[in-house]
Length: 278
Image: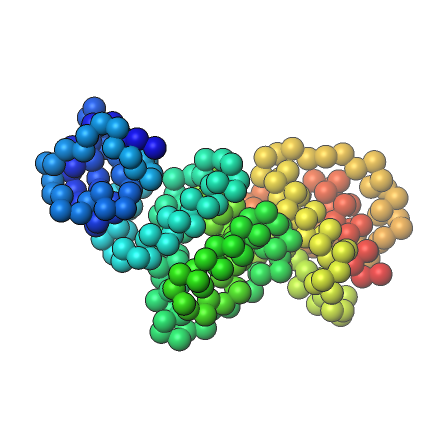
């Protein structure tokens, strides 16, 4: 990638500068691009750089510049290497927030690991089932972190990073990603409590149920319900599961701030409950 002619506005470190080209600010990343430079220096047109991006949102721009002053160069370099790997493997443009949220998360996590703090992820299984592609990329990211930092990064980090990757593919909406994983876990715990059973988190039925929860949330948040021609049969054949599904639907409606969950969706949830408990 080659840059246009631009003027350096600020040198963050040896590898990152803030510059202006045609009146527009942009971040330039490349090894040694900031070495020995200062504000006012010019970068010639056609200079080879690793990454050029401009934060479209002014608030994000300020947050990113602040983050650069707080995260050490080596951690930031590793994060950008990971982000580049993710983008290349997916073959798609990631939301600009990943340069803030994932870097901030990893920098804080590294400090916690170095301080010997325990990091636990209660939704690890659910995240792996909900976001398989993102989870696989996160596994590679954690492996890169372990190799680069020589630290013992816990497996729970795979789940956290996977959520950030998923968020970056969906307009930066991490809260929705977290909510889906939380809902899936809470629903299964409620089923276990109501039916006095322990559900096998490694079973095929569990994987299918978690996937169903994900798509149910997507349909509800986009207001695209699907018909259920078996509803009357489900109510008659699976009475207990249907009543439990009604209770679960109230939980879902509350978490998603909806008035109610369509009855057809309740019926499909009941079918999955019956499979999980049989």
